[in-house]
Amino acid sequence: MIQLTPGKLWGMRRMANDQGIFSMTAVDQRPPIKQPIADYHGVDEAPWEEVANFKKLLVETLQLQSTAMLLDPHYAIPHAIDCLSPTKGLIVTLEDSLFNQTDGGRISSVIDDWSVEKIKRMGGDAVKVLAWYRPDADPSVCQAQKDYVKRIGDQCSRFDIPFLFELLAYPLASDTHQTLDYVEMEEKKSDHVLGSVEEFAQPDYGIDVFKLESPVNATQADGSARIQAIFDEMGRIAGRPWVMLSAGAGKSDFRNILDHAFKAGASGFLAGRAIWLDAFKHYPDWSAIRQDLEGEASDYLKQISDLANDKAQDWRTHDCYGGTGAKFSPADASFRHAYKTGK
Image (spheres, rainbow, N blue to C red):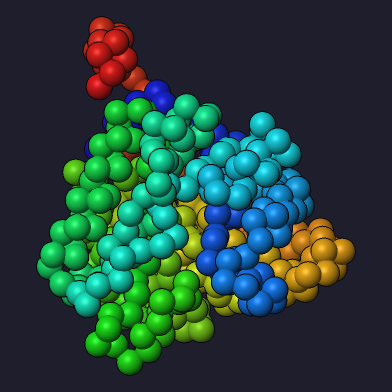
């Protein structure tokens, strides 16, 4: 059974609505935004102002329908924190978008001069970390990724802030569709996704919420009992609150994924490109981007939020918290001692 500390409980509540449902929007993407802008301008590095302006526009137009927003410290926080409503949960990303591509697989790292402590100090409600993982990658790569996640879990425990953990499968060098892009892996195997969740569901990693990709390719989420059984197994293995990510899926496909996920016990979503990518395609026409974000993107976000409110599981009722649900009920002395010693 998972025992919630005060800071973790408070952060979890801040990310959700009064029904205990997460309708969260991701604005922390870097390569999927930077690269198209750089390509348009014919430069290697996208102009900082252009990337930051788009992220600020996302916050301005999509926060109304969101329970929380995921921001990055490179662009979104310095340029958009002043327009984020204090009624919304603030999730801050920790991982660098650049990873070490080795022959044996991908190795993740944190953003330079950034930490769990700094996220807590700036008022973040949760720390988000993405780890690329394949159970069949080189054992040394797998171990490096495990150590990386455990270090962050330990820090989140020390600073008493929720750990929101994202897992993504990726193609190895030996796979047919090798790519370094942030796209859903072609010919993804469900066993890779489920095996990764099983590894990081172990208590040593200290994960509070899983942000999970579909265990099947987005176009395969067809409503069938066979596909539902795979989602059900993923939810069972996760063993704690979990939400779905969109991985760039189209609006219709992602809605189908959410149908499966909510039936399997997911407590909502944390999605980005499925919501705003169509609007971004208007770049550099800022007027058209805003119009699309305020129209179609906001309408879609409301639709999937309504779907979540109707069908997703209240995170507080998850079995991992025991029969009484999520709450904090410590012995007074142990509570004060833990905070006094900083443990």
